[in-house]
Image 1 (cartoon, one colour):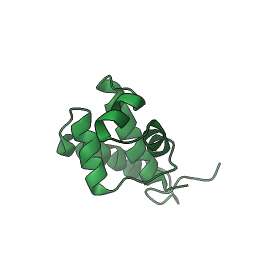
Image 2: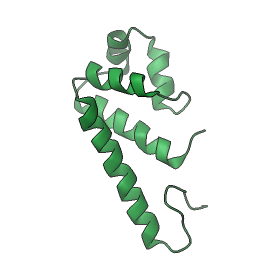
Image 3: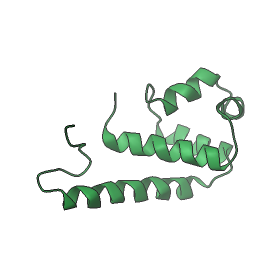
Image 4: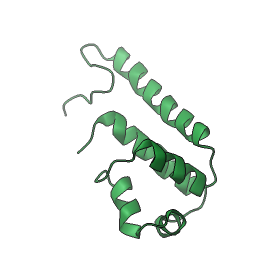
Length: 96
């Protein structure tokens, strides 16, 4: 549903939640949202805006800047990998 870059953001959110030992239900309770709200974010069915990103980070006990740095690292790695593959634009997934 969303770009490859957005998939990397979702992966970073999921990894941070798992490292923090917080379940989807636990995160949902901390955010005051439903379990399905968190599941839709992690499954790529719902986008996260900046304020929600901030609240998610704080709710799992991670500094928002630290979580954004994790996202940035993932994006930079994807860009470097794309540079190695001729004809592939950074952030664009090659056709299978």
